[in-house]
Image (tube, one colour):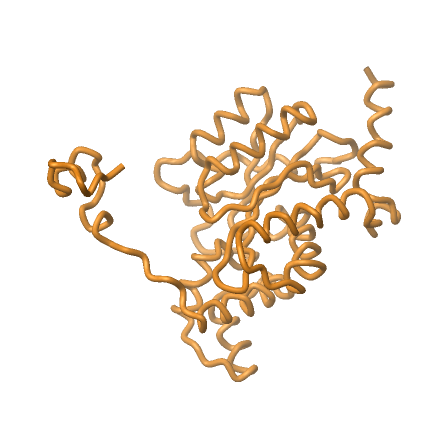
Length: 276
């Protein structure tokens, strides 16, 4: 939006756009190799021990001979969009400007496809750098309905894949997300509510609310991502898409009596027709 070649001074352009002049002149520094390696290890520890915050991660890393301060770990966790899945102080505080919707899944029996969809975003390491993966998962069948690999955390990516899921699979009763800025943004919440869905949001740091999709992240990372070293965003997109096609159609799921997510989704659909 800022045109550095325009005759209007950059300072004035920033004023008109109501953005900080400092952000206009700031050029982001690439993440160092040391930090990329540290982020990968933090990600692996987070999947194994999701209750660990910055202090516990610091101590765990120190035991492995990696000495780093908790503040630096916290900075990297924010960049990776992860937090400890345990009760946090101030969890009832809402993010300024974004409406937080109540959690609707407590004590709810989820027994059919398109009853509840869950959305989440996770960090994906590459050989150099990282990307973010956002997915829509049908909770009853664990089927990954749509997904997207992107280089930024923005509401437009979440909005794109939820609209794609609506177009391909219909309208669920409830869409559940966490309180990330990409999911509390008005563009995303409006796209969901305008379809007549109820919007549910996890309590911040409440591990039980996010457990369905966290298991999907564990599977894709340990079965595919950590075994690869993607050298480009395109390579990550193609390989993760290939994995999800296999995950849906060919990988038996232990919580589904060794049936695949796709077959479970299809097996449960006739019950909907009979009920109608």
